[in-house]
Image (cartoon, rainbow, N blue to C red; front, side):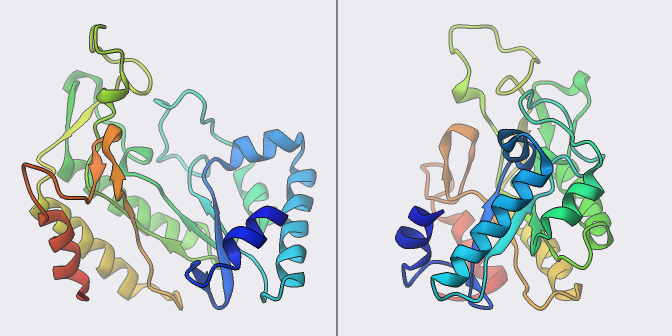
Length: 237
């Protein structure tokens, strides 16, 4: 905590919401298990908040991933488990916001479609999840995620047979064109604009996740079109 506050939170360009440094926990189940009990994990978060205030900030903006808190999650990630009594856990953590990391956390394509899945189907399923999360995590706002793609096959043993297993032997997105990605951005913007959240925020997966096939950086096939899609929807230079 002390290292993060001194070396990250105090950087002038560190992201803050209402002056509070944004700190996200990806696998909240792993975090809790590491402390042994929910009570100890909650105590650690409270200590982090106290230290953050002592450093001159109004507090800590704790963000947690929606993984494990809902039936939209699926089990191709063997190390990520659904949480017991998720409502109790979420209330105890008193998170300031909730978000998601990737479409695949809330979309499980049929096994018989392997090795591919359609981008549009994943987007439609995630949009339904966003609407559920609006009330499930209230009053904490939910910040929707838009994924550019998904292809973890580079992480597989390349000499092995590519067949359905657990991560990274998974379905791969097809039809995730810049135009399809732009449609996802427009839907997320529409969700954020209609939400009651003070802050209109979305997350994008990802800037440079090359080994999971999700990136905005230019490539030899589409050039800068994914970055251009972000500009077309949200403006800016």
